[in-house]
Amino acid sequence: MADKKENSTKKGSYEIPGRVAIIYSEVKREYFPTNEQYITEKDARKNAVIISKYLHKLNIKTTLYPADSLLPQRLRKDKPDVALNLVDSVKGDEFLSSSIPGVLELLEIPYTGAGILGLALGMNKFLTKKVLQQNGISVPNYQMFNVSTGYIDPTLRFPLISKLNEVHGAVEITNNSVSENEKHLRERLKYLINTYKQPVLVEEFIAGREVSAFLLEGLNKKVYMAERVLRESEDKYKIASFELQWLDKDENAITYHRFEDPILSEYVRKAFTVLEMADYGKFDIKIDDSGRYFFIDSNPNPFLAPQEAEAPMAHILELYSVKFDEILKRLLINTMRDASGKERLPLYNTEKQ
Image (cartoon, rainbow, N blue to C red):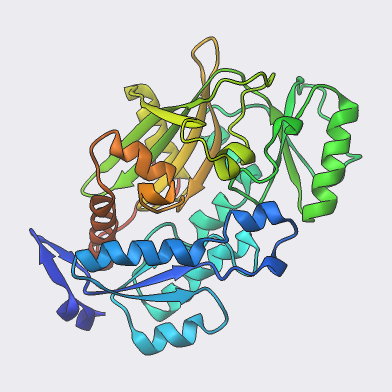
């Protein structure tokens, strides 16, 4: 891959790629079981176009590629310097997004974000919680259900919240997701399992403040955190629901306020490492009334877009005066450094970076 460096330019003492492939989800309504899941990805190409404009301002040539069956053939022909991997699903299946790094590895094209293992872990919330738990990072008590009639662990305490195990984007996260009794829980499980044909993760609902944390790699790992504040409502449970995140047009429906805690930052760094993330990652953390932290969600390769596309990552990093073009430069430089020989940390290496 040495020939690719001839097409790169310098920014300070680090390389900026000259040609970048932007790979995004191929989205068709028929790929998704519900309109809600389709909504979370319908703007995949639109967001890729927005990012390409930012890269053009950095004098980087870009080509857009949908993640379809022709992707390997097109990439082999074009030979880009770096691939910006924005793929959240393949044919509507989020778990298959881990196949994209596999294609790029075979073609020896450096790429942004997590590798095969990191994405596969990230698309299985049950395994994610297992890994976090085994590494001393607190998560709510939880249980996986493959059928709605399954045995309920008696140690679980209501209220319980039900989440699709292999779908992100707050799909099916509503106030109806929270169950206060077994009857409601089993009804919810039946609906989710029958509709999405996948297991459901049930966990204890943690009341309290919520923090969103992003880790961005560069010469070191930097953690950026903000408390997520929801608009006042009469809802019993304060949830960043699908409606609030995707349908509500009120710009004050969700706001972010800078949050700093060195202890939580260290937990985020550790979680990033043990979950095999790379370049950037996102975590949602609840803080209960006793001040205890509970990691309730994690995302390798979280939604990458500028503020005009309503990306939480851009909003939060703006609180730290980090502009979107700077985010892109750091991701691309980090990828080029990796491609030139820098080793990524192995799984379960939790030494402070």
